[in-house]
Length: 227
Image (tube, rainbow, N blue to C red):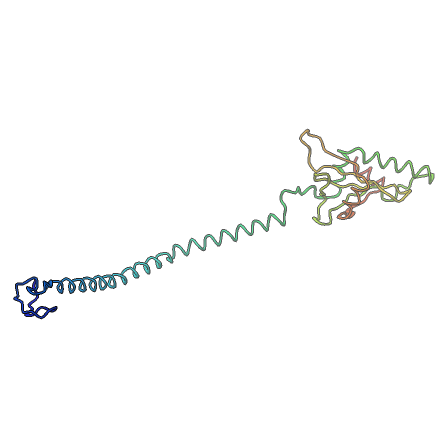
């Protein structure tokens, strides 16, 4: 393609149509064509880019819409349901504390179990009777001599003492208006024996803060219960 110029644009010298350079100043007559083509190419590229951008925007919009499909919404609801279930399970475990043994249901059962596995209960009461008879001259068998204690926090007969879950039995010395306390493990140890222990005064002060009398027996009532 040639520029049909009659004069050189630089020096004004007449030139023929087939001339590529000005015969007078040597100006490259086709440089105008190159510049025009470059401008056209740049403009065309910009136009093509601008035409492609709406397509890219549409693709992004389609992808965003795909990410918001009902299937994804279902996954979100399923995850929320899982979290709710997990929270409910945590609350249930915290409130019920399933790792704590429930223990026996009645005070009679607790006393019979405790007497079976801890002969110190009867022995301590015998000391109390001896003290009463020596001082008073006789033993009053009509007043309370034994009690099963209840955990005021849990509402059961189970306490935690010495890193064990135990029952708590109180044995009275009515002469001096005092008592002893024995703990008996709720479950057998690995050696198939039932742990039991007489509490110290400090232990009693600690455990008694959450203890209340569930049921009491006189000497006569206790003898009938354990026979």
